[in-house]
Length: 339
Ligand code: PHE
Image (tube, rainbow, N blue to C red):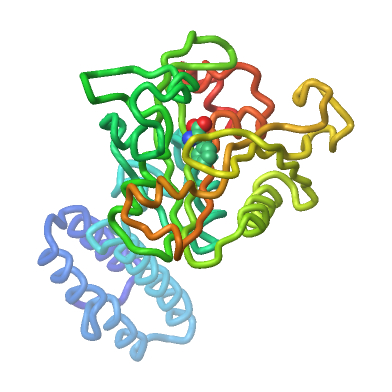
């Protein structure tokens, strides 16, 4: 068919529109493209008709033919079977919108404090060791220089779960297990749960957490203990923290001490947290008793060492200014969310 008049273009547009609307497959689309828009397609061939026209006709026909071709090209290019579907139509949602806020969980404050303590000692070369919560009388007491009926057993109200089995009252039995398992030099940090049959109150609970430390080698001295605990306190509390060492008693260390840190809140001036004393007690420590070494097969003539034990709850109460230990175990999310 020859297209030379505006009317014939009108008929061509109608035919193309009808075929375009009937496209149902990719093959249909490709057929349409070749027929109308291809190199030899009808709409490109229209220029040939211009040769036989007067300049006047050429102008009007040329313009009409161009706009017809452009219109068909544009619609064809924008059609969905060309892969031009908008994201909303394709995906059923708008991927440019911001996402939903998912509430993230967080570590329990006691886990955070434990991790901090362990990391600080790991930085000083201590490795981590664990022992069981249920211990024999031997590990919890006897190997720690507390034979049966030793009065020092009274310092810790014990849950007996059998003739010779207890829920460990401190993490010190892990010292014994570590010394049995490896030869000096030993540098170990031992976090874990401990149990004491105490009245539950704002200040004490029947279960709490400790971190034990042990350093055994030739020529380990009391000044190593002091330096290690000072370095710890300065990283854990404040870089200018002072510590105070007071004499104390534990059957498994000699000499034994308790360590206070300068109150980080009032800087030693006295406040409610430190009960106006300017100092906070944070741990028990001492030089490993020769009897403990002997129980583990470590030669007390050759080796010396220090050990310490600190309460994680106590450290957390102090660090966060919390006044009731029971809050740690109730798991009220309004409390937990604050950490
Ligand atoms: N085990 C002691 C306690 O629970 C703390 C301690 C550990 C003291 C190691 C000295 C050496 O009270």
